[in-house]
Image (cartoon, rainbow, N blue to C red; front, side):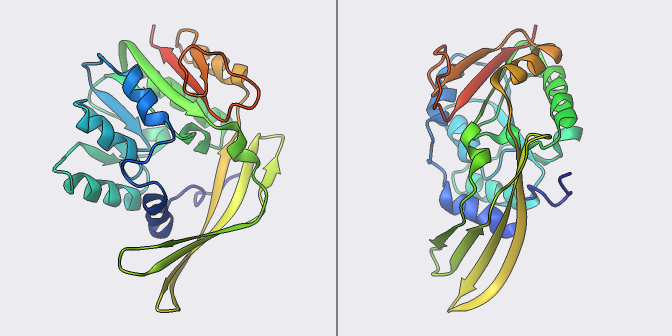
Length: 254
């Protein structure tokens, strides 16, 4: 069973995320969302908002969007990125399974396979029901999964250099697969170096749950949603194909 430390996104992992996927970076997901949200005039919620990569683009496009994240370190970077652009969205630190907002939303969005970070099936289903409750009638849940992300098993090392010359490294160790629980667990060691000396290190376990396409569609309808539109490769309405690394779901509150 995943521990409470899994997917925590502490200081070094949040920093690495911001260096690797800075504001303006897109996998094609931002453009896809901007297209799907065209004409959306109601408020939008982004759970697991991270460092603001998507939120800021949507704010700059004129959308009313707020977000939450369980990582205080991620939120600190997100607030800093927003301030640098003169933006001040509502941001909260909340957990997946306990978030509570004081309004209903026209859309709830997630990108980059974020939903897969919920490692327990029962918790994921409860989160879908909570999403449903926080949508206005006719509101949409739009998110994606990345099937290949669960099955990376090779050792790898990555390096980033910050603006002040400090070096951040990430070593990803061999992924453990739990086929019964449909989970992958990857130990990830982050190290912060300055002048050739180790300043800080951090070990995190990246836990992801993989979903079958039809399994997730059934989970959505069980949570109360209408049958979702399932799309491959960020092409809305195009049926997923074998080899698609991104499968998108758009489900409406009845």
